Image 1 (cartoon, protein in one colour):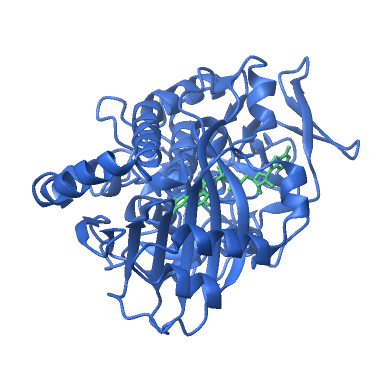
Image 2 (cartoon, protein in one colour; image 1 turned 180 degrees about the horizontal axis):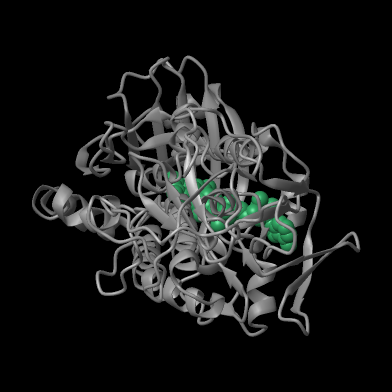
Length: 495
Ligand SMILES: Cc1cc2nc3c(=O)[nH]c(=O)nc-3n(C[C@H](O)[C@H](O)[C@H](O)COP(=O)(O)OP(=O)(O)OC[C@H]3O[C@@H](n4cnc5c(N)ncnc54)[C@H](O)[C@@H]3O)c2cc1C
């Protein structure tokens, strides 16, 4: 009945070998892991039809009208609507998602949605960048696991370097403790330190390679639902896009958030201004594959030495927000002078790395979003920083954005209508992400205490890290894994 396709044959176009609506044979019961009958939501048996489509590169799968099944060795999944078949006249169109934002959540969501049979078109406000601006961040195994779930782990590992832990120091060079950054993935991949813009660019490239249509220079200004229930997105340049749903992955200053709920909160300034830099041939003698985080007297400093000996670093400076005019009138050299003064009394390599290094991120005000009451309305939803931005201290914003993207795709695949799928998604995500944002806020407020605070911290932290901050106590954050293949389960509160 079904023609065999060479395993690993590269699949480029969406083309059914035998249309679903041709004469049907008796519905067959096939097994998933040898047990489950191939049935739809209402228990009807459904019949496999081999198709070729771009959702699973190098993998044969069966399309079943409203279902698709991966070839041997892979698992079942289903999509809510029939996969669009250009050869079938009158076949239902594939669900189309408009994604706003090409940072981390946006391209990851586009790929995850594509995996469950939803066509995503991505709109990014900025022109395409080289990916060379800005600072570095760390993606932990929970975020890497989400990329792995959609076959995109290589986007991160190809441009990152391994980072196993955070080591904390005080301003006098005393080691206060170590924070392990979670269990490696099954293939041994540990947390990766990556240039933020480079990862964003790599995810965009991978989405484009998989056939996602991406438009740059498209800034969303408004969106509404039309009489036929579809979403119309309007862009600053006067153009429009129409889809069945809209995913706002437009960051902490999200426009989508305010379209969904005009009374939604804005980002909350966390009291720290961020700087980031890079020092070639840093010459620093330090444990590798680790972030070294120094509680300086006046500001907080972090550095990480790559295998090549180059050092990436950041500084968090407690102060009022930098205004646009201050930013415009302050040169990189002038910011560097300010940083050198702030770290002048601290032990560690801060002064040396700043003096010899290149400032790649200057005076970035940092915001968080502890609680956004409304994440979705009708067929529009926000994910990533748009819904729950943590302070950078959490080291979790990008990882959570990746988790979100995959869990959203699962919910849209498994729950029969879009608003209900959004509800399910929120139930799966809210508790976890708000807990992480709260942790991040605590971390930010304790970065530069006064003299008494420093004394207490230096006495307490070694004890806390020795007895309380262990792999086990952090497992809820780092060892959380999203599995795209399994169905969503509300009871487990895991994805
Ligand atoms: C200094 C710093 C350090 C950090 N360190 C870490 C770390 O170590 N680990 C970690 O996991 N996270 C870290 N984060 C957080 C992390 O960068 C964010 O949580 C993550 O980028 C969120 O991804 P996102 O896709 O939701 O939003 P973003 O990455 O902000 O992407 C949003 C995208 O939407 C686009 N956009 C905005 N408005 C519109 C519009 N109207 N129309 C169209 N497009 C629009 C933007 O141009 C942008 O490309 C850090 C953040 C900062 C600032």
